[in-house]
Structure formats: C-alpha cells, structure tokens
Image 1 (cartoon, rainbow, N blue to C red):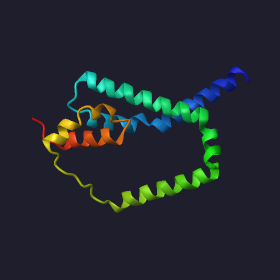
Image 2 (image 1 turned 30 degrees about the horizontal axis):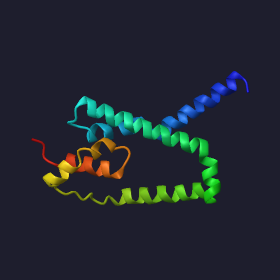
Image 3 (image 1 turned 90 degrees about the vertical axis):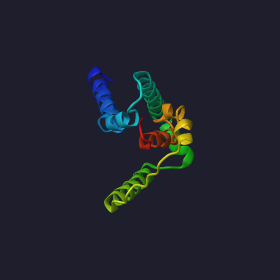
Length: 138
C-alpha cells in the first residue's frame, strides 16, 4: 500500500469517526448537563466520556467481525435492524409525545452527585444529571 492510499484510508476513517461521534450535536447536550458545575468537574466528565468512547470504538474496530460471527449477525441483518430502529425513533419523534418530568427530592439530588461524573457512561449518571437539571437552583 502506498502513502496516498494509506492517507486516503486514514482520512475516510477519521471522517467516519467524526460522523459517528457527532461532536457538533453532543456539545449542547454536554453544556446543558454540566451547567453549573465547576471547571474540574466538566473536565473530568469530558475526559471520562472521551476515554469510554475511544475504548468502545477501538474494541468494535478490532473485534467487530469476531463479534458478528459469534452472534451470527450478517451485514444485511445489521442494516435491516438499524433501519427498523431508525424508523421507530423517527415515528416517535413525529408523534410529538410530551416528555414526562418530575420534581426530584433533596435525597435524589444528593444521591446523584457521584453518578453525575459518569453522565456519558451510564444511564444512571444521565438520569441523575436530569434530576439535577430539573431541581431548582439556589
């Protein structure tokens, strides 16, 4: 493989990762979920998010074919399933169902402090950030 071909593959790979990660759409979400936090907490959440995303991409990139073979998934099956999932998400967005929110208790807000650092890693961290975002600020 010559240098031009390697550079083309690297550029395509980088562009694909950029499209998958979609930092332009993720930035407002990150800002809203870490609103009111100090710089150290925001940096910690960002570094942890990047590390987890990078780890997932590396594992899937290296072991993707093996994972597909173990579970018996073909590329056609993945495309069909992805299309169905996108259709369901789009249909739900068109329905415009209102989001249900609640007012968190002080115990909920206090219990979510540590889990908030894992906002990009776990559903619990995301839920706790929402609880904190919905709670009144002093």
